[in-house]
Image 1: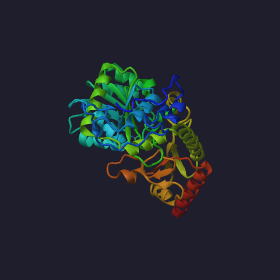
Image 2: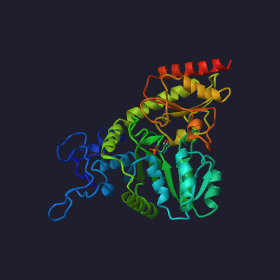
Image 3: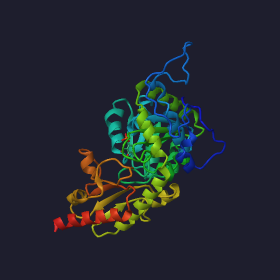
Image 4: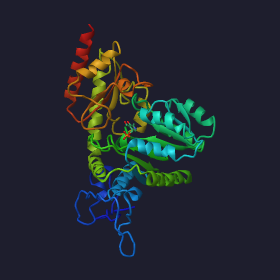
Amino acid sequence: MNNREKYTPWTHTYHVETRAAQGDGWRSPTTGAVPPAISMGATYARDSEYRTPAGLAYLRDQGAPGFEQVEDVVAGLEGGSRGLLFSSGMAAATAVFQVLPAGSRVVVPRTMYFGLTKWLLEFGTEQGLEVVQVPMDDLDAVAAAVAAAPTRLVWAESPANPTWTVTDLAAVGAVAREAGALFGVDNTVPTPVHSRPFEHGADLVMHSGTKYLNGHTDVVAGLLVLAPGPDERAAALWERLELHRRLTGPLLGPLETYLLMRGIRTLFPRMRQISATAMALAEHFAGHPLIRKVAYPGLPDDPGHAIAARQMSDGFSGMLSLHVDGEWQRSLRTAQNCELFIRATSLGGVESLIEHRYTFEGPGSTSPKDMLRVSVGLENPADLVADLEQALERAAKEDR
Ligand code: PLP
């Protein structure tokens, strides 16, 4: 570990908002600069006794000096014990599956970020994993799948991309624990502002730092966080993850590490405003004559609302999906007609995005064709509502 020296060590335990805003109070140990220095070294000089002055030898081995701050801050926000920074969310998620022994059985959601499903089916199975896909919102199905044969890992994502299906994390975590399986949770969408999976029995939390943590659509990054007081199996897995990163090198560059930390400083106010706007949009379009359905766990009649209301706090995040009425092509045209919503993939930035997931995912997509995925940003909610209204109206008119 590096950059251990804090300029002004804190003597109190502060609230998470404070920890995020001040990046846990870290300073550049040499200059005292409030934002940490960006250190570009790939290798580090040793003194005449062959010692490494700051414990750093090589970038792939220990990461850049900025790593430890991001890892500590995100671990702190999640209530975990340690963090591990990766070059992407996929690098972080696939690391977990790659370090499992060949032949491991893993139970994963049928609906989750489609890239991870694709990797598991294309490469995970080739590497000897038995991948069992279940509807994670059906506890009986989860329990039956886990009981059917010895299971090494249960994976969940809640709300799950792109349908925002809610998983009862505490219940699934209990099923996993009882069966002796580890429980990993992708917490990218709710972020620790709205959900803390370690409070519900997770052993491991994963993030695409590309999304809300960075929040400015200019970095691809990933993180893993280890549970507080991890049991032996989780601690052993973590050791393998550290070694895996060291030996395979999915590291974030120093500049991107700096940008990620800068984004994390404003995570709380961004998420609160984004979630409030997403709620306003969901309420506006629920029951709208040109919309068949709005999928958003904040809506009282959403199938996952009761569980989401119990396990999330302070809002339901900024992701929702609109199912457009009429022929499915109308959803595509609605996206075409948007001026303010940017037609782009990804999520979690300050600018609102809209995406026809079925078209983006291509062959094998399980996304409904009438569905537009919306990532809500920091714009004025009235502007966003007006843009979608005119886009829907024009698309409907073309059908008449
Ligand atoms: N998890 C979720 C929920 C995502 O939405 C994504 C990307 O869209 C990922 C993981 C993968 O992250 P990355 O693109 O940083 O590899």
